[in-house]
Amino acid sequence: LRPGAHALLQHLHAHGVRCAVASSSNLAEIEQRLGEHDLLRFLQAWAGGDEVARSKPEPDVYQLAAHRLGVAAADCLAFEDSDHGAEAALAAGMRVVLVPDLKTPPADLLARCHHVSDTLVGLHDWTLVQLR
Image 1 (spheres, one colour):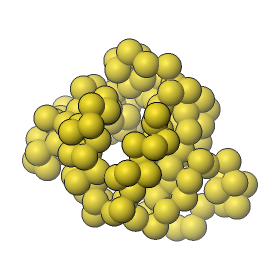
Image 2 (spheres, helix red, strand yellow; image 1 turned 120 degrees about the vertical axis):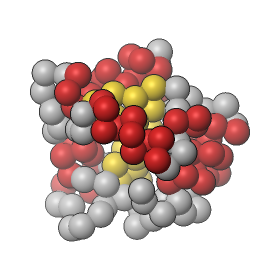
Image 3 (cartoon, helix red, strand yellow; image 1 turned 45 degrees about the horizontal axis):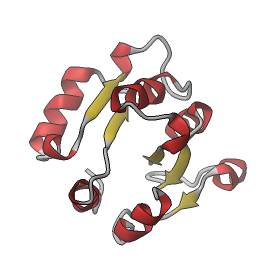
Image 4 (spheres, rainbow, N blue to C red; image 1 turned 60 degrees about the vertical axis):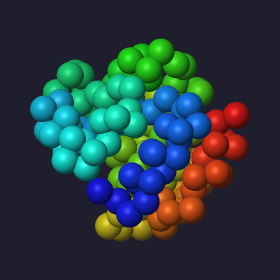
């Protein structure tokens, strides 16, 4: 779990923001990890790679997550740590906050993201403003 993820989800939940997880992992693994980190209570939906025909960088898992939330993809803000994940969210029509994990993403991907940060810490109020 990335530093700041739990606090960010807790903050968004407290402000009535509906949140979902869109992961390439299978659904059982997602539910187990979310439970281990006490995140299920902050989420209204989750979607796994085993539920869609095409995996990231295709948009399928993000489209499914948005559908389960009952919102348009264009109204979503996706937080991603990988190039493939960011490409998937962008292809779904979402705005992307890229928090790179292991390597520096290509410049063209960085340019297409709504925001790039080296951490989730401190993005609480910024995120609320973006979703209004």
